Amino acid sequence: MTAEFAAQFGKLIGPEHVIEEAAEREYYSTDISGRGDAIAALVLRPGSAAEVAVCVRAAADSGLAILVRGGGMSYSKGYVPAQEHSVIIDMRRLDRIIEINPEKGFVTAEAGCNWARLYDALAEKNLRTPFFGPLSGIQATLGGSASQDAAFFGSASHGSMRESVLGIEIVSADGNLFWPDNPASFVGDAGAFGIKTSVTLKLIRRPRACAFASFAFDDFPALLRAQGAMANAPGLAECFGFDPESHRNLIKSGFNLFEGVAALGIGRALKSAVHITRMKDLRFSLHVVTEGETDTETGQALERIAANAFDAGGTALPDIIPRVTRARPFRPIKALLGPDGENWLPVHAITPHAATERLVRCTEEFFAGKKALIKRHNIRVSFLTVLIGGQILYEPQFFWFDRLSVFHLRNVSDKQRGRYGGAAANPEARQAVAELRAELITLFAELSAAHMQSGKLYPYLQGLSAAEQADIRALKQRLDPRGLMNPGALGL
Ligand SMILES: Cc1cc2nc3c(=O)[nH]c(=O)nc-3n(C[C@H](O)[C@H](O)[C@H](O)COP(=O)(O)OP(=O)(O)OC[C@H]3O[C@@H](n4cnc5c(N)ncnc54)[C@H](O)[C@@H]3O)c2cc1C
Image (cartoon, protein in one colour):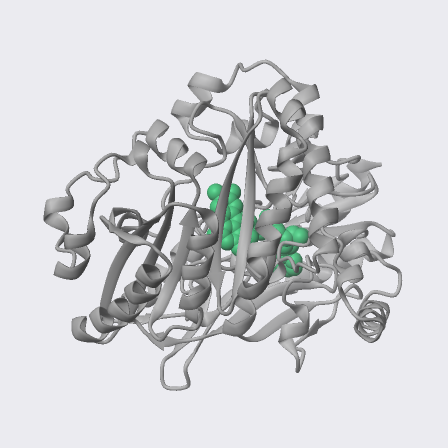
């Protein structure tokens, strides 16, 4: 059966772009969170929007479910098939930057283009997009990020990807290309409404100046108060916080917070407040980047932001973490594993900043009740917070010792593979993490939290009003009446 399909698709896009080998299909069908119940019958690698369209038409004629994979850097089973009778379309050959138009303020690129490539091409012309990529942007693609509604770089003031999107070209389940009037409805859809073949984003002038600051806090509520007060601060580009376990991870990875501090040139007011001398003494930390046209502008923005931190009880730290993060935003990804080679898996909730303190308190109570389970399986949990416009993303991250999956073996660094490639399987701990993650998602839903990266993990529809649910179902019915596009995604 597979051979018959392979020959058919080979005629459409060239046999060298059709993958039928079992191990390869298993790899493409596995994300960071592991395998699903099924492995796709074929993986297709079209090279243009027209080829995507013919692939979709042929797949639909054979009743095959259609999944799309960009950089593959997600962990919510978004591109993992729910049935064997499926094809995965790998978008990475569509990586051209089609038009950079500073006069009209837009850039259009094919959906398989990754963020690092776009960032470099725009930097050459002193341009940038407002949101300019997730931390995984060396691999993550524009189409994948649009389908996740990703956020990080630039997100404190420019929000998630949704706010930077001007237009999207889509191939729908009948194999037709179209350009929706309301592209935002297709952001965060996990590919359930169609395949994005190109994305048009806003352009801004690349900010000429950047300033950095970091602050220490004794407890999480104080950090959250500061982060909430900073929401929508003019010039704030990034604002993210770490808990003590995140600091332990950084230390184990060989990171020294105070390395080269003398050379960093932090503001006098901030420098005078530095009082922590060893990273291991650090409890909670918050890191900010401001950007603007001049050093005076970014410095003034930073002073206002520092006042928020000090008012909440924070003290200044050397700013090496945000400075290093920005020095090279898109670096090879090492964080697929913990510092001792553990498996890693995040889960998150997004709430208005006023609701985050309660969310964190409830999550801490949840973990307090799971102490014995967590100890039994030697699981560690760290916490990250990220400001996205007026909202805070709160992300517990699990670490546990386990075998490396086919996904890990292909994507971790050579050094990590050499050290941890032979790690023993630990299905009990893996199962415990899966259950903890699922229970947290239920708790987050009870607290009315929102999510990006919906995939097949988060209860997307349940979070919407009855009218919004009806609109989503109607859109799906109109675009994909046979339910072939990523069955199960968004709960559809
Ligand atoms: C180390 C690390 C750091 C990360 N940091 C961040 C971060 O800072 N911010 C953040 O938001 N996320 C982050 N992520 C999660 C993830 O990498 C991003 O959300 C990223 O945007 C996913 O892009 P991708 O191209 O890899 O998508 P994929 O994983 O390939 O796909 C994601 C979803 O989009 C769909 N899809 C992919 N391409 C298309 C297309 N062309 N048309 C329609 N649907 C499509 C897939 O079917 C799937 O449902 C991180 C992940 C890792 C491993």
